[in-house]
Image 1 (spheres, rainbow, N blue to C red):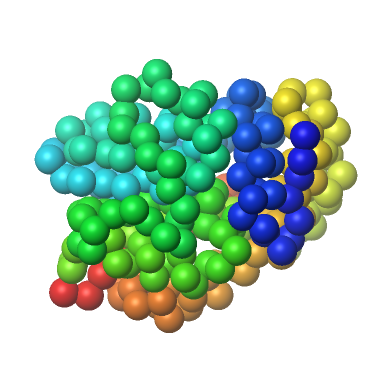
Image 2: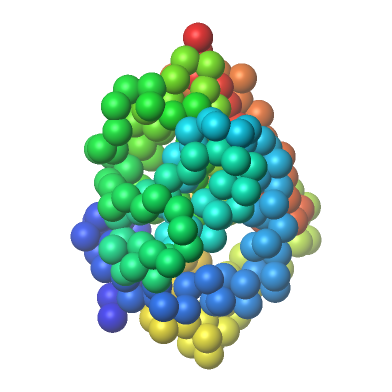
Length: 229
């Protein structure tokens, strides 16, 4: 099985996620000490999907988050470029589409909201992905990004960064179907911009009213923004 590099070649990233698909959700729960459920709940509350709205859940993996969003009565579409991930989630009962985040197969303004959780970091061109999300959302529509970030308290930041590089790979070897992929995970988190820099990138991509909320002392951040009317 493969792991991607920090050049984030799309073929390598897709193959890597195909390799971790079978036990991906379980591995995430173990590695996050169960915090992944809380992160999804907060993301859902920030997104606030409404009945009959159309919501795009991008980099949705097996559709765990899509199912939660759909409980609101919104029409939620799970999109991912890993066929392995989509295959694992095919029984979840939500629409699933194989899609490249940089060339989405949807019309302009097709959705009321778009959300991406722990997937923006994997795009080869973050700005292009954010602009493509902007394209498929209607004027006044919403963006919510849940992504790993930079802990705000220095002592915790030190412990956290050491955990990523030292403890995470051995734990992944015990529970993941492709533990080498989690070496990439650790490296990509360490190289990812902090909360403010990501907020600036979102704004530069055309979104307005950018705000964020720190979770788990900033190890994860939920950014939200609006498309100009």
